[in-house]
Length: 568
Image 1 (cartoon, rainbow, N blue to C red):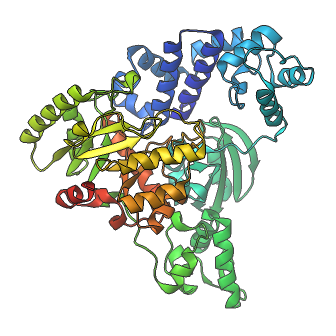
Image 2 (cartoon, rainbow, N blue to C red; image 1 turned 45 degrees about the horizontal axis):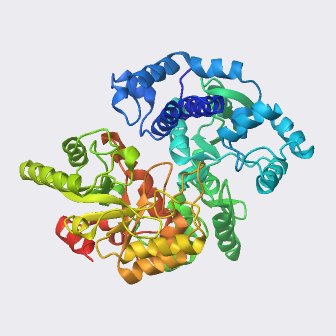
Image 3 (cartoon, rainbow, N blue to C red; image 1 turned 90 degrees about the horizontal axis):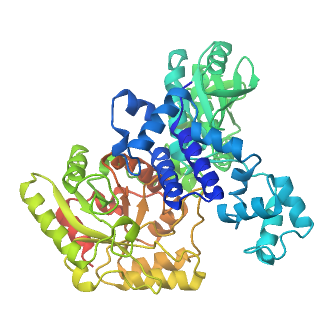
């Protein structure tokens, strides 16, 4: 059965957890975690890369050994090392790693000292006071664990990139049965997706359901009927498939795209006209007056067509009634990428290779922003290395035609808000992306002041991934984004929407907040490999959800105008 990227990433994550619990070499543990993030975020499936005879060892964090393991997983559907670890370490130790304050080291201690192997074991140990006096387990940790164990299991949500891989494979599989589209929060391009709502135009719904049930990745069939079939895939994503007639296609697409609040707002307008709007169409009495397309329904209701990304009932309906919807930015508007890494630090390709890949996308420029010296694990650049890189970029630019590599850095914002490199180094650069990579747990006031102080440095062009979140792995740090966006406007500093699938930071709410204050945004990929330029579409998704236009995104500009914007 075909193995999706998310499944391979999950296997590597579980392996890393179990290896760390066993006390294995930390470098080996980190290698599996990094490989998991790389595979999960790939813009195309590992299967397709292998079929095209691509060398997986050239991907970030994937050497020859891991490339071979990935190929074995794709071929067999199993990871032998993980299977062995599970046999040696029975129970639910892997699941415990998601509990607050309970990392692999503490899990190992529970396993060794208190014989905890399952979540129920942990509950009983807390109730009987067995954690008292155990190194690293104080009253605060115990209280957090007890509360987490009592909470109902939250709905599992999947990163947009993971859902996209599953959705595209399903659309290709079902295409011969009719017109196929994925609706729901996926179509609204939310940063996480709970399930996949798929619509197929067909008069033979049972046949469409039969085909879905026969899909290789189906792990469980929850329901199967003449118009609706529900299954769960091996990745854990639930798929709800509905067969709809052509006459109702637009109404069904609108209804199942949502959001619920947006749909209610539309139904209220229909009610004002004494009409009825549902998933079958827009009706006057029993007569369907619209329904084949979304466009005709919006038009009949007196509204401009509202892009799916805006359908959250945040004021878009009122704007559509007045014909004042913004023209949202698109991928085609982007002229360059302003956050790119090379093999000078933790990237996998040379500066020339990254430039060639950017130029192949039709870009006019890219900003080379390798890490600064504090990122020792990434071989960050000190002032001397920055100077050498500047000379290297100058030589490359002399050879390039119709393309420019902007000289830049991703400089660390230190704990006190100072920058990791001196001003005399930063002043030589075209682009300075300042980012937080440490001390994520500072109090809100200190974290906010830290970022604002960095923005006060006149050489800082952009604040990178401003809230520091890693979706499903690390919460945003405590920062007052209202103050940060206000300071960005006052200081004329740009904020970034980082298109890395695990970041998507700024999120849509903060992007809209920045827009409302007139803050300019850079939509970038944080590319560490040539393939990562494809992440721009995820960044644009978030920009569109934040209602951004091309004018509000700086890397839609031609190079001369961009240079003026970057020089504060």
